[in-house]
Image (cartoon, rainbow, N blue to C red; front, side):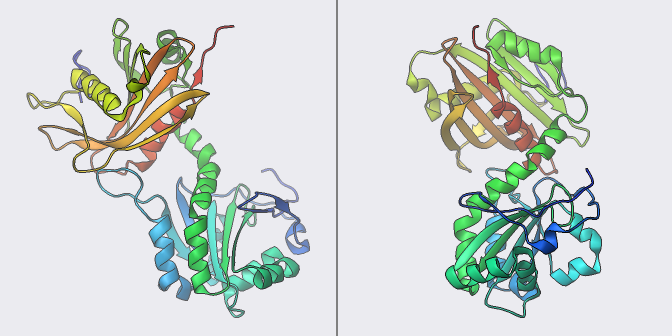
Length: 375
């Protein structure tokens, strides 16, 4: 990329193993064996969006494993080339016993058939939940999901998926997956934040400029820089050049609010295309950046950011005459205090590297903005 201006483009102590229902997130009491762990625990290790599946090998190798891979390994929306929602590895309880470091990872999904009394994973769940609770689940429910924390290490999340028979395990996976995925993402939130602000906490100069132009507080990471500033057109382009070759971009433009049609999907797409065509160039004459809504869909959602109505678009951009493309997430935010609409176009260029975590970083930056209100 280049711009018109020529810029190239634990504490120690007793830890209680807490469980909560995925439906109500209500805490249950710890069993005596888990509660009486006096030895200090290490801090859990692991990467963003990485989960460890604990199951018997026959569960993983069979149809239940197919269901796990179908949901947890499905494609993250939307990428030029498919990337999974979660990266997975499978361990049996015996694998964990043979290599203790495998018990010090951050996020586990434990899957077991409660009808199989000889299953090592079922025995593990029985021990973790306690005999009374285990038997109640086995007798009264076809399937269930439960959360545990800090079993082997601090800041550790364990999600238990249990069913009486494989068909009920499949039902549990299918019906509980959205809630489970949300819980894993919440658990990853602190690590995601740390990955964004690892160099310097915030670029105070860019944060001040964004606030002056748009009336929002955006925690611009310290390693972002100004690529374009046009106060007359209310346009900014902030970007970060990653050491691995990726470029993360946040383009912004504000305009006066006229009516609700400015939040139409086609209107937002046209605004984004006009903005990107204005600034994003390559060495190929006439090549422009546009949203590709012919080969791949553009998803759109409505919700609120800091109490302001927001329309979100998610899809893939491309250069018209170059083999360049990447994911984007864009927002139209109704800033009621100033009677304006703020369009934010966040996109990634990263040939040959995974872009899932990078687009999550941009999404996190924008969705945590705060609107400045008059005192």
